[in-house]
Image 1 (cartoon, rainbow, N blue to C red):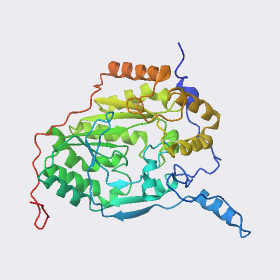
Image 2: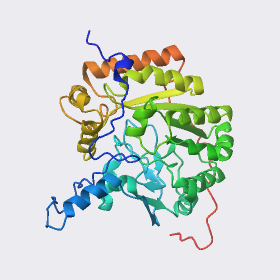
Image 3: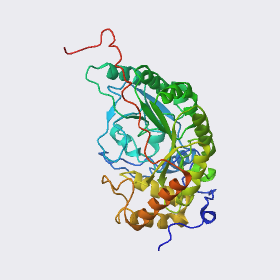
Image 4: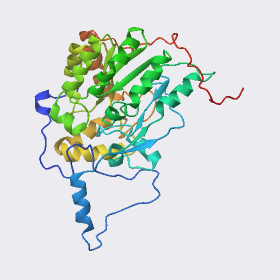
Length: 376
């Protein structure tokens, strides 16, 4: 039987003082070109020290810029059979957390921005999200569905502390008695317990915290501006005490990096109050692939080849597999062993595997606002 992991003690992340190009607080400083870019660029020394200046800027990182957007719509439908919700709301585009592995990075390509550095430094805030949601929930033909907040961006990333767009969205959902779930890796979700808890007690809300590692040094490198693992566990405790159903997402599972911690993460989250758990193996769509492999070379070069070899073992020999049914779980013997470990740990710890089924029957359409257009 092949051995799926090594003892955790041999795989603890050790921070590197001189990771070339790595900048504290950023997942990447590489402004990688996106797949829709019409122009290809390369470094060129014009004799005026431009290469040296670019290198200096790379080492110092980049400031975060928030770009305001007035969205035309705020609800997105989901037709993927391996995702457990019907609708999603993403109050922001991009995410300052800067997770090196984030599958959502390629979405910045649609804005003609880099999935690399721009994704975590050019944050688009949908400032009229609550207004657009109110319009959607008052439309005559609207039918409620299982709705998730934060599927391709963290709705509680740092800028939310100031803009409170997510909070305004939840206020509208509560007004309409519309069910919702939240997925986040931010402790800021605690701020909105006053809104989430009453909805949860009525069977209309659940929260899932993503915990990728318990190792603070590894978390700082992989998810530089996300909450620390211990802060996320405290958020779970606070939500659970308030009566909110809380689940944990141990995602993504990265072989030989955070994979040895799988059972310990589940144990810590269960002790903090989680009732449900799910897990997704590493996905490397589009530009995420070169970005993540670059991150491996910066931070764990001695393990990079081994990690990617195991990823390919679970992806049919490829770096990524986007097919429904296998993209979340992988395939082959190693993927099967991971699933077995996860399922056994969940059974031992008393986790329920199904997601919280929220009550759709309480929904009441919002009154149409004066001046709101209608066809009939």
